[in-house]
Amino acid sequence: MKTKHTRRHFIQSTSAAVGAMTLPRLAGQSAKGGSPKQFNILYLCSDQQHWQAQGSVDPFFDTPHQDALAAESIVFENAFCTTPQCSPSRSSMLTGYYPHTTEMMNNSGAAGGGDLELPTLGTHLQAVGYRTALFGKWHLGDHPRGNAGWDEETKKGPDPKTTELGLDFLERHAGDSKPFALFLMYLDPHDIYHYKPGQSEVNIDDVVLPESWEKQDFDSVPKIHREFMEINQGEFIIDADEDVWKGYRDFYRQKVKLYDDHVGRVIRKLKEMGQWENTIVVNTSDHGDMDTFHRLVFKGPFMYEHMMRIPMSIRVPGVAPRKSSYNWVNVDTVPTLLDLVGATPPSCHGQSAAPLLTGMGRKPKRDYVIGQYYGKQTWVNPIRSIRTKDWKYNLYTDWGEELYHLKSDPEEIRNLADDPKQAKQKQRLRAHLDSWIKEHDDPFYSFETTPLDPDEAKTILKGYDPTKGS
Image 1 (cartoon, rainbow, N blue to C red):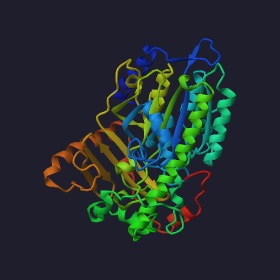
Image 2: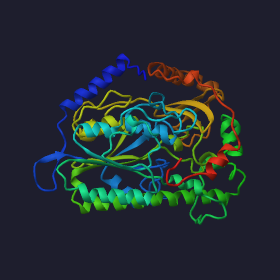
Image 3: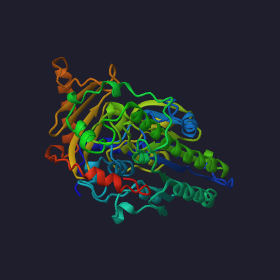
Image 4: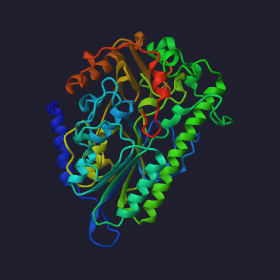
């Protein structure tokens, strides 16, 4: 596989490496009271949880354990996935590269989605002395190189089993002199796909549908949004009454709560084993869910905030909790965690946010976030997105453009792409996007769309395996 590294990329990665070499190694006291050791790492990851699906952000959600963790963490309020699909996003968070470089542009086994062939964070942590474990959802294929790096692994659900394996790991290794890195990859709230109107138990008494549900105009956005709802995975709800849509929101809330319960059990065990002050704790998700915003459900060919924006917090013992406005992208995971434990990060698309956490070293800066989308199953609809503090521009290979002024229109209700008053703004964003595409050897302009198979989504949903996700 050929990966191009530009001069700018080389400078950025070299600066990160220098920072890692000069950054004092963070260390915790071993449980036995001996010499200091590197901090342990506990990595908690949900599936399909948008950034607002936390009580600390939106009281509609009941997440006391995530809220308590966030209160002791550095919370990245502007955190994003590289793409709103499980496999490609996970390939980014575990390698530091965008999906066009991991060659997992779609879910494993789908069009454009192969097997991960790059080394992961697990391999990098093993190389610097960590005992590593990954339990739960994998969804990155079977290639030996991509699968390497884990001393212990069970790469499937269900979630209760993932937690039991995690608790057992902590009991066996919390007292070791060797540091551990435990990755618990959960399925919920992805099980929102099990919502069945009229059958699922829901409580809609306090449910309020978002403004964009009321005001969504499918004629003003690319037509594939409507196609997704009318003849793909949204068909079951597109013409339903308001109570059915409210039921979706509550069912999603329930699934988020299930994940939160697991977070609570694992954190409680970590404290019982005396490792709370020796462990870096990450809480995040791979991508979001539309959660009825824009009269959309699940995930699909769109780049709204509820697709791209994710929870992201890092608790570092001894570091004061606070909120950060830094534009975190999940490619930053690998360089940041390696930097925090005193290892030299590899050259990749991400950059280390460790200086933002520790106050030591040059703080990273990211003026805009790039998002990618390839397709669902065999339905290929490539999209690229660029998001700044105030603006978002989405470019589709065949279905047009979107432009949103996030500052005045945070729910992205008014598409300004055809507004002549915003022509210069759109041109400016398009220029930045094209520069990024060229600099990163992104093959976006070579992709071709494919027609929708109306029966495919029904087959996928019917055969959904809750132990593996999709």
